[in-house]
Image (cartoon, rainbow, N blue to C red):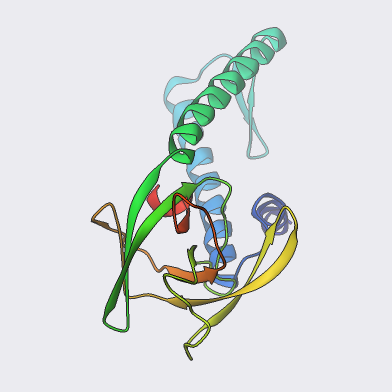
Length: 198
């Protein structure tokens, strides 16, 4: 029952991208739950806090409800401010993108976009979208079909796995796919999934 709840929780929170990614997230949730429980059992055995109890493997704390509500609201506001500051910083970032495919390198300007979360559906690897004028993936044989959604609807693009990716001359040690699309913007020629640089 607990494993089923874990699997359902991961499915609701993250969705299903691929079996590998889904298994990793389920495993991480189980490991963190075990570490959380083990840590509080250690605290309970060593310190015996008066406002803490463990009954049927469940940790209970005695808190003032008003204090809990106030702390929850405070942490929520702090997290919103942190996310806003860092999201705006990432959102406005224009970087130099360089990638290698079939022993050729391609260079262009790219925007790091927090709203871009396109992934290759089988591996879960992030996808960088590049203008066809820079890199057209359609003629290549070893390509994948990537579904994606925009504000205007959903569509498909072709993408290939590249050998190397450098962002501002810093190598990215991840599996990256490059997909091609029509005209993107006057100021940049590619859109980067923000998770790539995190």
